[in-house]
Image 1 (spheres, one colour):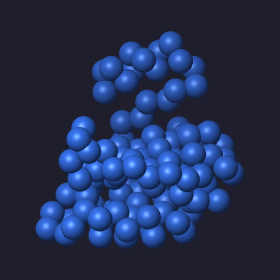
Image 2 (image 1 turned 135 degrees about the horizontal axis):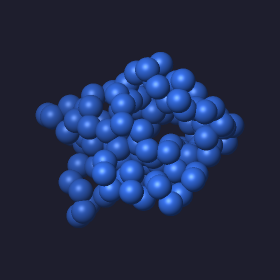
Image 3 (image 1 turned 135 degrees about the vertical axis):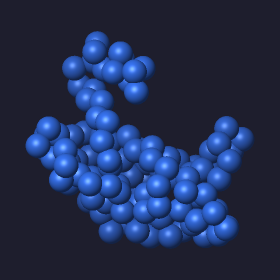
Length: 117
């Protein structure tokens, strides 16, 4: 977090936020609507639901960049099945533009670029 704060100091359009991403109501008062992009990297069950709930802060056409961790969703499920479910859940709020498995850098991770509908 310290690195993120240091980087954000010199970039007025970058807003570091340390909060529970599952509860956007807790930080809605400090986050302006109309963001261009949300970068999501959370390790919890329901990563797609977190992205959908936080989509309220994006402008129309705003982008989501997400790293989805299959083992955080379900330790025993096949990652491909987990990723299919995540894509389906995200598609209610976003148009998925691109996905890419992140191996060999991160096992059982999927990178997603999506645009808010």
